[in-house]
Image 1: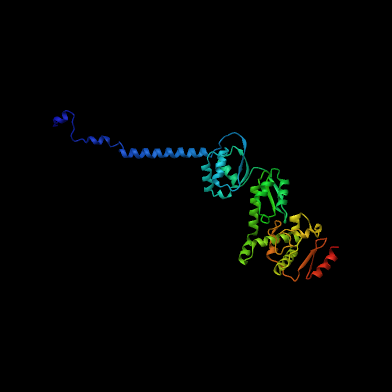
Image 2: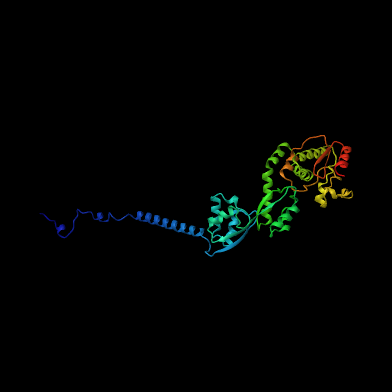
Length: 344
């Protein structure tokens, strides 16, 4: 066989030396692989970090008391919880609350968190407004004044601040709904007033809508309802009394009702003297025409409905006998006869 000199010295011109590197990946493939691996590592590290943020700040078994002020938004709530050591991250708490649509349900008040708790459990407790404290039943009767409400609640809740309640309810007589409530034993005045006011709005929304449609004054309706609440007991009588009082206003007659004297002098009808009838106060409907300047109590739904839907009659006078039965009269002479017959 013919052998060239090149072959003799071990040189093979027909062989492509580049074929020896075909198994080596190009530089751009190595760069892409590095980026993918780096991204996976960063993602894993982020997930581990986020997972750690959901864990309790400490494993120590303890109770943490935190007060969330009335009107706090989700960010301020999260900041308080982080500052008090209930959660690790306010940012994560906020994101979870927004993502789960729980931010509008977060409640104020004093909470007891039984640590350790992860962020999901903490969020659920605040969303459910579960304060971790005993709830006490408090029934507020129709026609209760703000002062009476304060006294009634203070007897049930040992930590209740009457002065703070008075400040929070200033100018809101008539607009806090009398009902049965369940308040936490350590509830502050803010959440209590919020519950009373919210209940009023919810229970009277239909009547308020009707008032706007008919062009009537909602404030006057509530003032009238507060008078009716004190003047009549039965629903039928409430609506008849409502018609009488509105008729008196329409003809320019003084209302001459005794109910405001309970509010301004703490005196019932049987205790009012002739001198009391001369007591100079805008609430004295014997001296001044029209409605009192503001409600004298917090009326219930039936009284408000009666103020909205009076029964029209020809009566202008009424009285309640010793058994609470109502008697009506068209004229003052008939009214005097009723007084002689049923009151003396």
